[in-house]
Image 1 (cartoon, rainbow, N blue to C red):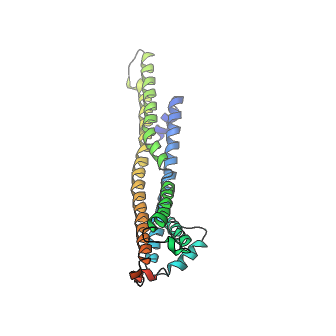
Image 2 (cartoon, one colour):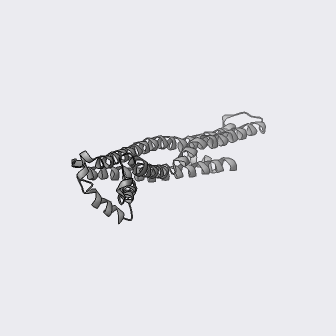
Image 3 (cartoon, rainbow, N blue to C red):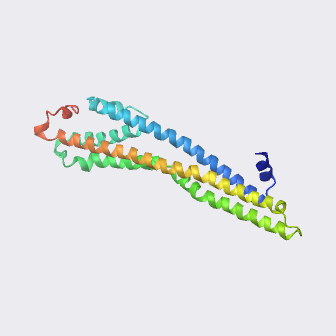
Length: 233
């Protein structure tokens, strides 16, 4: 370890800049990874809890009023709120509400909310993708420069020995390793977060479809006594 630190401290200026840059990118990616992992876990847990509560025969109108007064809503609560809010805005004029109109009103409002939440969930993922794709090339720059220094050392001496070229080659290998160290976790995290976000968005879309179906059944006369419909009254 001391040998690697000695090589890094005695490396050429450009290679040192490359090393510092890669270490900075690696730290940046790990900060994003920890924050995004915590965020997605919290959102997934809140979504599961919401679904359990929503389908436990609660009074949805009262639940909506609770959401209305709640400042900090979870994403799934926000989707429910905008869908129900759109439904309630039309509820004052019964002529405007038909089973066919609900997909054009409540469902569309929820889809817009889902798109907004998806954009928020994907924030910082592009940064991870950039770090993953750029880091190996930055490391390669340090590698090329270190090898060039090795050849320059050879041209300035009459004796060709391992000791002559070893420092430059070692600089090159350190730069390459740092590039991979920065890139590999970023790639793995990027792919995992994309899968997690896809699962969350699928839950949002399923919920919006289920709520739309529930609202549609409410406005079919022969099904007004349905158990699910009674939740809305």
